[in-house]
Image 1: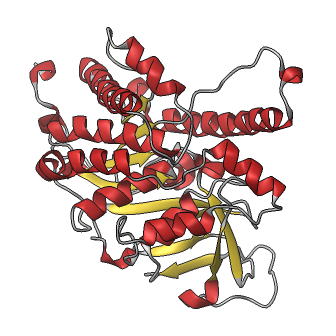
Image 2: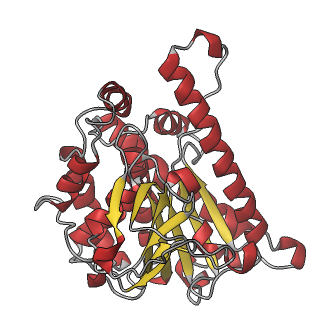
Length: 367
C-alpha cells in the first residue's frame, strides 16, 4: 500500500520547490529542523529550486558555506551540515541589539544608527564567509534570494542567472556577493535599514526617462529592503503563468513557514507609540502572508481534479501530538538576529522537524 512506501520513493521523480520564510534566527533554526526531516527521507536530492527570504536566506547561505558552496545531498546534510549549522548559530550573532532596541536607536538618530552596514560586514567576514560571488553556486538547484525594491514596491530577486525586477529590468549573471544579496533580503525597515545598490556597477543600462507601458523604470540606484515586505513566504517566484501553474523548474512546492503568528491585542489604546506602530506593521505583514497562502493553496489543491495535492505548508507552532509545549515555545519567539538560549534553539529545531513529519504523514494518508 502507498502508506507503506518511503517518502523518497514517492518523490523519486518529483522536482521539489522549497520556500524558506523570513523570521530572523527563529526562522533560520526552524528551517534546519524541517530540512533534517527531509534529509532523513532522502528528499534533498529532489529539490530543484529554492526561494528564501530574510532568515531563510541567512540559513541557506550558511548551509552552502558549510558544504563548500554546493547544495548538500541528504547524507552530507545529516553528517556534516546540520550539527555544524546549529553550533554556529548558537555562538555567532549577527546583531547584538534586539529589533525593538535597534529600531529606537535608528529613529532617535534619524537613521544614522541603522545596522545594514554592520550586517553586511558580518556576513562578508571570514567567520560567515559569504563574500563569495553568487556565480560560485551550481545551476541546480536554482537559489532565488528575495528582497523588496523601495522605489517601486516590487519584488527584487537575486539568482545566479539574473537579478532585478520587471519595472527596473534584469541583469544577467550578476557578479554580486552572497553577503550583499542576503543583507538586502534581511534588511528589515527602520531597525536594520536598506541596502543601497548602485546599478551601474553591475552593467545595468538605465533609460533617460520612464516610458509608460514599457515596464522600465530608470534608476541609477535602488534601495532594497527585507523581502518580507513583499512576500515573507518567498512563494511568488513559484506562481508562474499568472498564478495558475508552477514554472518548469518544479512540480511540487514545500513552504517552510516560520512567520511569527499574529498577536491579537485586547486594547490598542494602551500601547505606547512603538507598540502601536509595531501592531499596525504586523497587520500589514499578516495580510500579505494570508494573500500568498491563498495563492499557494489555489495552486496546490488538485484533489477536485482527482489528483493528490501538489504541495505542503509546514507551519511553525504545529507538530505531532504530545509535543504541544515545544510548539508553543517555538511560535512565541520574537524575530531577532541575535543568539537564542539553548531551550529556544531546541524547541525551534524540534518543532521544525515535528511539523514536517506531521505534514508529510498527512500527505501520505491522502496520496
